[in-house]
Amino acid sequence: MKVIVVGAGVVGTMHAWHAVERGHEVVHIEREAEARGASLRNFGQIWVSGRAGGEELDTALRARELWEAIGARVPGLGFRAIGSLTPVRDERERAVAEAAVARPDAPARGYKLLTAGEARAVNPALRGTFEAALWCERDAAVEPRPAQLALREALLATGRYTFLPDREVRDVVGEDGVRDDRGEVHRGDAVVLCTGAALSGLVREVAGEIPVRRVRLQMMQTDPLGEALTTSVADADSFRYYPAYASGALDSLQAAQPQDPIAAAHRMQLLMVQRLDGGLTIGDTHEYEHPFAFDTLEDPYEHLTRVVESFLGRPLPRIRRRWAGVYAQCVDTARVVHRQRVRDGVWLVTGPGGRGMTCSPAIAETTANELGW
Image (cartoon, rainbow, N blue to C red; front, side):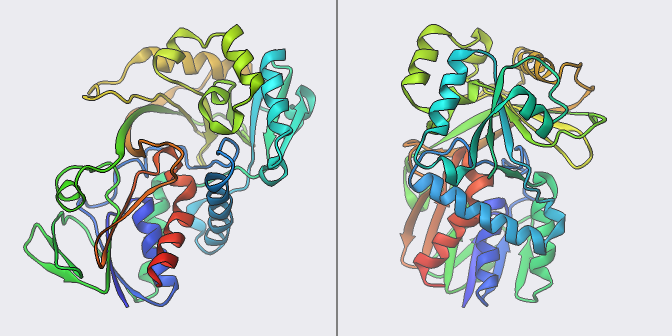
């Protein structure tokens, strides 16, 4: 079988990976020289802890298994099973963490409530003030910027993979091919469109208006910390954001302890992970209303800096870079992904939202299974 994959972000690359793994030939088409969208502009976190119970959690756990297996074969991914800590500062935040630990699926996530001392033993860089921390053993990380390059190198080594950069697909040709902006037609036995946040143009033409929206975020990265941050770190605002933490305890927290105004205005949470070079990737904000701003705002960065420094008990290193990104998210956020057959042999796969880096290996595996690859 020959599979045409359009889009070289993590979702498209994982579709190519599964097709090659199953013995098929892949032609992979990307409109830029390299993918430059949300697949690179994220934390690189394999984030199990906050996922909704049921399909979303099952997908994340399966993806976590796949990431670890692929990472063992592709060292350039920088896979590491570091887990995460969410420090809590008071009894209301602690109650939300306790409710999470009491979930029936808590063992599958690796949840445990640690004392402050136990948390510092796991992650000695957390020298600030907090009274306990929610530990999630199943969380992990990869390096988002080089990940697609490392996967592509492994795919090229199979001899069954062709990468065609700098080609924008303009049209779907029948049920087995696509035409690029150079006028070339690429035909195969199956076509998978993994277009990320590009939802107009080709996508609108072949699929119409789909129940997927675009979300903008802001993030930053520091110079090396100078010591190991041995886990990912979140703050209690993540309780307000992720569905796994919905509970009566969260309702009480929301009522009695309003979110910081800057965090609320920008729909923020803290997530932080250390890169292999020692720098910290820190975020993030969420903007849903179109048209998106074209500039980055300082207030969110200042808020994140205050929160991180309160956990570390020390000043942040110099901020090396700031950026904004846009990803595609299903309007019904309970849906893991939008997967649509637009013609008999042509499928559109998009809209995983902030789950894209976490869930892409399992999303692509499901596509491969459903298409009978």
